[in-house]
Length: 263
Image (cartoon, rainbow, N blue to C red; front, top):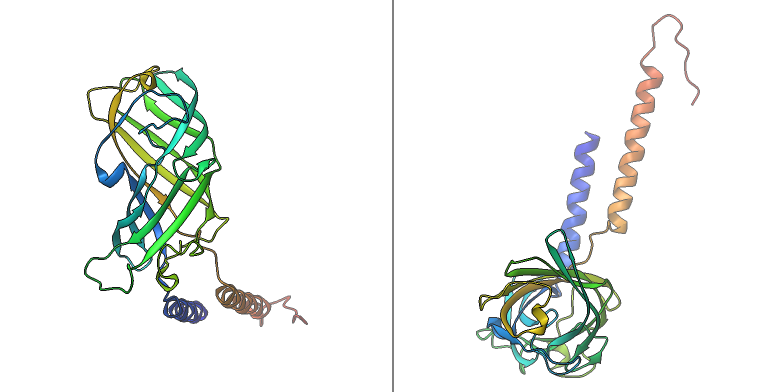
C-alpha cells in the first residue's frame, strides 16, 4: 500500500513537471563535414586554413520535443587543431592536438555556430528559430584509430562558453537555447572516415586525404532529482520505516519473554 502511494505521488510530480516544461531547447547538435558532404585535408602550418575540422559544423539539431531540424542560413566555421604529437602503441595510433583555432572565434574555441534552426514548413516569424553557441575544450583532444584502418574516433568534453541571443542574429523571441546553461560541461563524440583509399598511420597528416565526419555534441542535462520528488521520496521512506518499527514492536505479543516497547 505504501509503495503504491509513493509511486502515485511520484507520477503526479513528474506529470506536473512535464506540463510546466513548455520551452523548446536543443538536446543535441548533430555535426558533420559541411552539409554532410566530404572534405579534404591539405597539410599546411597551423593555424592556416585547413579543411580537417575538429568537430566539423552543425548539420541538424535534435530538440527537446523530439523534432530534428536542419541547420539553415547562418555561419558554421570550422575549427582546426595543432597536431602536437603522434603515438603508436600495440597497433593503435593516437593524434594529440594541443591547440584549437576556430575560423570565426580564433584561438581556444573548439566549436562555434550561429544560424537557423530551420523548419521550412513552419511559417515562423522573422527568419524562424535560431541559435548561437560557442564551446571551449576541457578534456585533451585525442583522435584515435587502429593502424591501417580508414576509421578514427574523437571524443571528449567541452564547456559552453556562450549560448544567448545577445548578438541579435535573429529575433530574440525566436532564440532556442541549449538544454544545459552556459558554463556547463558537455560530451562530444565523432567518427572520421577516410574516403580516398587512405588509412590512418603515423604520417597521415603530412599528406593530402579526403574524409567524411559525423558526430554529436550532447547538450542534455544530467538528470537530477527535483526538490518535490526528493520530498515525496523522503516522506515515503519515513512511513515505511515507521511501519517496519511498528511491526517489529508488536510481532512478539503473546509469546514468552515478550516485552512491550516504549518507543
